[in-house]
Each structure stands twice: as structure tokens, then as C-alpha cells.
Length: 338
Image (cartoon, rainbow, N blue to C red; front, side, top):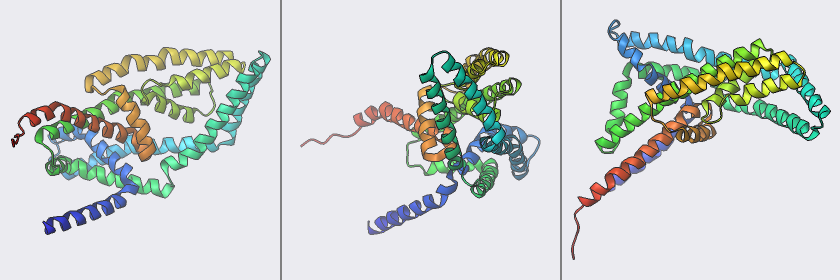
């Protein structure tokens, strides 16, 4: 008993120390694991033509770098550059000033003042939050290296690592199967149903921003992707105000064009594609995704968009398992009579 107590004591101590060591790069570790999971079907297909697991993992690591990490880093750089660009800021201020003058000429001074204040607060929030969201350049570079390293080894040995983890978890086999199915379903639902649709919506909306000459197009495209990723919210919160501002600023053709572009193309992507993708890959409730993403961003930063819904979804799966199987376990529990 004493030996067991000492073992548990040291186990907890080193578990805490391990968490402290991993925590600074935890989001990138999770991102590498998620990418390995999402590309696992492709890895299984490559097994037919490439027998070496190391070669397959290396090729997929290169593919993930080109398709995921490079565009992500480029997008962050462009958004940061636009936030600091004097020319882009001047164009946006001029557009807002023209819209404010239009509102004041129509006896809407209160709305004009509120609009200007909201825009200024939004810009200040973005300027202060983006550095905290992604961290320093060194931290991001280190994180990307860790992400690729984790992705390589999880692509090469991920199935064995996941099975070893499930074997080590002190839970019944039925619950382990529920956890496995829940994690896979949530990741597929988020990635296929939410993420792909949000990226497509953002790209299509961003093309409209460039065509109709809306200031800070890369920043607004990023915001459209984020809003489209969130259930219920949608990219309309970006392209519709942009078109309305253009109209109030006297740029009628560009304003109407932006509104038509968003209503005909961007909205139909959300209404037609997203429900089919989610229904085909997952039964994840939108509330789980929304609460998980908001809480995940607060706790884990940018990667919380993926980590938060997974954690929340696993918790709900465990609760469902407890409710479903506890009565049967209670009935089989022996009763003691005095």
C-alpha cells in the first residue's frame, strides 16, 4: 500500500511537470495530430504503392506544409501587414468618413457616431489581439517545427500510438469505442462541414472584395472565414456591411455589386454546401461546435477552434455513456442485507 502511494505521488508530480513542458507548444502538437488524422485516408491509399512508412510520412509532411501551413503563414502575414498599412487604413477611414457624412445628411447623427466608434474599437481590438493570438515570430516558427515533427511521427506510427493510448485509458471497452467514434465524428464534422465551407466562403467573398475595391480585403476575408466557421453567425456580417458602406459613400455600383455577389454566391455556399457536408460526415450539433470553439479560443488560442469542440464533444459522449450504462451496472451490483 505504501509503495502504491509513493508511485501515485511521483506519477502525479511528473504528470504536472510534463504538462508544463508541453503546454507552450500544445496547440501545435494538437494541430499536427489533427492533420495526421485528417490525412490518414490518403496515407492508407499510399500504402498500395509506397511500402515504406517513413517515405509515406515524409511525402505527406511535405504535402501538409505546402497545402496547409504555407497558406496559413502567408495569410497571417498579409492580415498583419494590412492592419499596419497606412494606405489601407487611409482608404478605410475615407470610406467610413463618406458613410458618416451620408448618415449625418439624412439626420442620423447617433447612428453615424456609433458606427465610427464601433469601427475604431474593432480595429483596436484586432491590433491588440492578433499578436497575442499567434505569438512572436520565434514562437510561431518553433511551433510550426513541432507541428511538422508531430505530424510526421503520427502519420508514420499514429495508429499504434492511438491504440496504445486507448489501451492505457482505464475505461471499459465500450466507452473507449464511444470515445474513438466521437472524436472521429467531431473532427470530420468540423473539418469537412465547417472548415472547408468557411474557407470556400471566405475565398469567394474575398474575390468579391477585390473586384469591388473594398479596403483591407485580406483582413476582411479572414474575418469572413472566422464568422462563417461559427454556427449561426455567418460571413454576412462582413460582406453586407461592406456593401452598405460602399452605397452610403456614394459608390453605388460597387456597393450593389458587393451585395449581389454576397447574396447570390457567398450565401448559397453556406445554404447549399454546408448542410450536405455535415450530414454526410457527422451528427455534431451546432451548439457543441459554437460553445467548444468560443471556449477553446479563450483557453488554447487559435487552435482552440478545433480543440474546443473535440473536448466538449468527448465530455458529452462520456455523459451519454454514463447515463446509458449506469442503470445496468447498478442492477448487477450485489446488495448487502443486515
